[in-house]
Image (cartoon, rainbow, N blue to C red; front, side, top):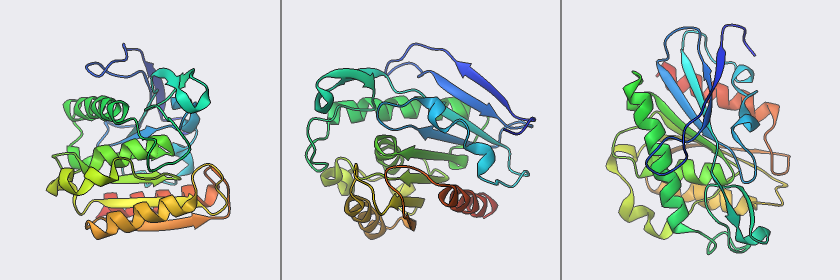
Length: 238
């Protein structure tokens, strides 16, 4: 990790009305951009804490990374075991297993983190939402329903939730939002077909999607991180 960056853990109660606990990675100077990066099912914010220095971001961009921890809830598909999750998963069909109440709750929690970034001096259109798998589903869901334009969305190895309501709930402010979407061709957890369906839907709605595939399973690879960094540099530079 860059020695000029600082990392801190914010400790706050976890509820829809209060901020989630987060790992925060600060730039050398006052942050002008923020990335709120959501982990996958069963993980936590530390899962992507090593990623920022691997992206190759232009040092002229002062970027804060906010890595929240999902609350621990019972997950039906895992026998009701409690684990960090953005929403419950009830069965193996990604089209029907959506816990809409949990999705809405998590979107509210992400919006609270976004509001804090604005309070700390980062403009809404300088905020990226990013997420892997279940976290990516929440990132996309939240961004497209946000009333203020955002910088972009990173949707990694993920899929759409509540897709049947998306066209009606899509906010015009983010209809053309830049999206970096990527998927592993050998993903056994989230079939790449779901990722392609997400990409196609977002493109039809007017989003500017940059799509990548990689010969990997349900994970993130170094080539993908390089592509993410290049995409972010283009978005921030433009």
